[in-house]
Image (tube, rainbow, N blue to C red; front, side, top):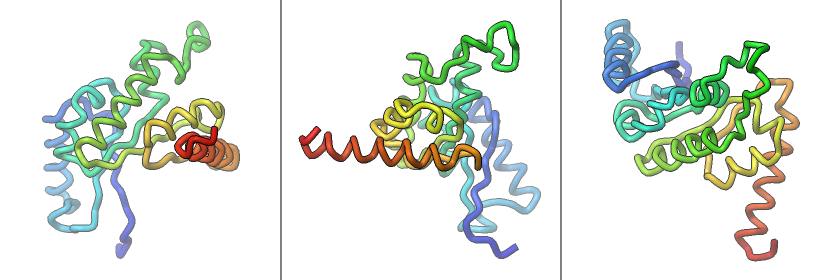
Length: 168
């Protein structure tokens, strides 16, 4: 189609073997890096296994996109759509933040890019600060959260810069 900035996102890829099968299926259907060297294939890091095995997944994929809502749901065992337990859903839970930080570190160690998609950086300035401190490469926002998200990231980056300079 002539597009040069397309990144394919593979959701809910549970195992490295499943990742290999997805890449093989893409190739069999005319979509692969050997057919289009500019194509980037990312895996959604939304299952704890994606984080725990990030180095192995990085061997298959060009990068990661943390799905913070799904990762939170699966890490905490909470159905965010259930009124009974939805109040317990919290992206800022210590376990969730540890998984996100681990994903960022492991991706960078493997030389892969990593971003995050989810509401938390626009809803919670302290979560945006956490992501900046962890060295996240990119953050995507829903259109209705874009302005607030950019403001939160800008404030977090300014604070990080002041801290790095020893001023803060």
